[in-house]
Length: 452
Ligand SMILES: O=P(O)(O)OC[C@H]1O[C@](O)(CO)[C@@H](O)[C@@H]1O
Image 1 (cartoon, rainbow, N blue to C red):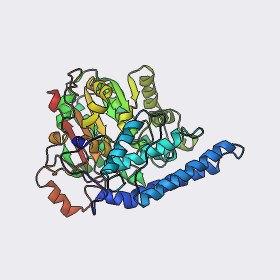
Image 2: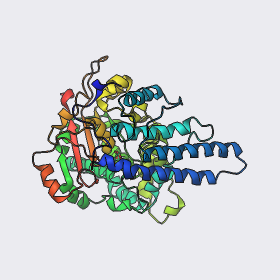
Image 3: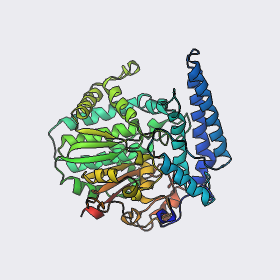
Image 4: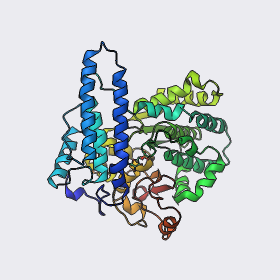
């Protein structure tokens, strides 16, 4: 890490008064990590008393988690990450030392992007260096409940509406259907578990199922490149499309349905699904979560027998066969959980960059992927999106191939945004004080600069 890698505008930081980053470190993160500790303690309590070694190690992890929470609350300095199974350890420590040398090596003084990402990396580290807790993910139950809890009603309704469309040859409203899918996929990002930390939050209220609901939400779509994206996608025949996933559960389910449609209409013949390698920002999709969604849709638990699950099962069986015959590919490159913005991907993950350049379209889901696409800094809101992306997409220095066009589908949950028309932010300031961060507003933005 060095200063030349800094963004062109000031970083978002927890030390900035009244910013969402400040609220994140004062309130949201302590809440999230208290819940992690509670969940871990409950799991520990349920370990068979004869597993003495596992309990002993669990208690050590419990102590580490308590200390971490205390460090967060007191804004203490970061600690180096001890070597573990992941390949990015040195890189992290290099960054930690860099921030410390600048006297900015604490949660609030550092850039928000680094500080919050560091927390999830540390959590993964505690488990990784253990013997008995390696595979432990404190967020698994939350992630699973976000599909098979009250959400299942939405899962079934979506399958009942979409499965017949996917299975039919009807294609005279392809443009409309495509744009609606983009919007389902966008609004699916509203219901993420790191924003709605309260156990009482009813995320099903946020699910958009009917076309009417999608239409009504158009007033909250404050930057919309969907027609441009369609103009490009309509030219694709049997290509590869990559989804850079965000939250497990209902959001990823929506993306699976979308991808299924893209395959069935011949635009794509393969899909690459980019997941996270470690538990990340609470509800992000790991490969195990991805497989769990498909397996659960094929075999819904008995508690869901009151529903007619025929269409869900039918779709999920098709998804499984796409995975089995290699048309759907799973990737969890460690770069997706780095602290770097995407404009530094070519430097820090050249192989991933080359791999992405072989695709025909990249779809980045969610708030964090957006923050990394534009770099997490205070852009004037009317900065063109393409400008805010910097040189992310330029031809690779080894193959000379640029990235394909890419789209960002994001509901706004951080005080960074670019690409707004003049006057939009002023109007929003008047109607909703928290429009930048409460997840109510969404954007669909597109960059095809390097592929033209
Ligand atoms: O799941 P998403 O859409 O990436 O959102 C992640 C959440 O984490 C943050 O990026 C960081 O706390 C928030 O801004 C956002 O609410």
